[in-house]
Image 1 (cartoon, rainbow, N blue to C red):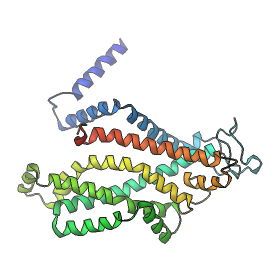
Image 2 (cartoon, helix red, strand yellow):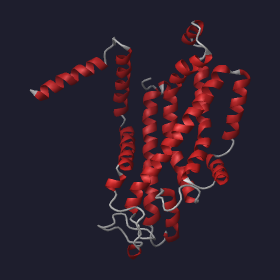
Image 3 (cartoon, rainbow, N blue to C red):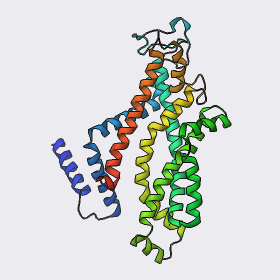
Image 4 (cartoon, one colour):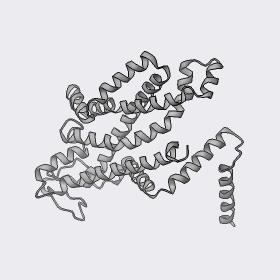
Length: 310
């Protein structure tokens, strides 16, 4: 009886979410979210990407509990050991457990990705919506500044900024964020231009709403879905740039278990002890693939131009 009751309750909730005549704005929003989840769930590759990203988050949160060893503990007697029951992914040139360093490195990767997204996405959204809605000389100035940043490859500009700021994970995050906002500004501007002369915007304007209120309350929410998709797809690039800076010694500094820095230290013994550099490289590949698959799935659901749910 309990299972039948739960099934009936589940069916009732499903019917409530899929109702064609929602009774409140909250019900409508939950219904749209549920329809989007159904569309997302039907994409097997997107679910794989979601699984990889969720695994990364879980590993990062519970790293001290999952890691079998201290990531910075040096046991020179165990240096450069191959895969074994004691060290599943072997040890590096200082006898540190590679699996433990990969697990703790997930924290640094997630830390970099989240902070860059939190810094770069709002800047790009603000610049793009302001330029797109106001137009005129404001649009010209903001877009020319954006073009200046877009004229340089991200990695080259990040290298220049980190060289000026000094090596370190915080400076690397600032540099990556500064190089990441221009594409978001372009997307937000394009979305704003398409909707700034819409009837509902005109109606809001006739009601006396100011420019700031229109941009913040009506245009920004409409640009958010496209921005979320782009940010998710850019996560892989952010990870690769961070790994590149770490590889060159300009990102996270030793003894932090950053994946790019681990590859850099492993290249010295690549021919004989290949696993030292290969294992963190595989970790970067898997996580980058996960974010790309997740971004593709979100694009199918959130981007109305692709035929997904809006």
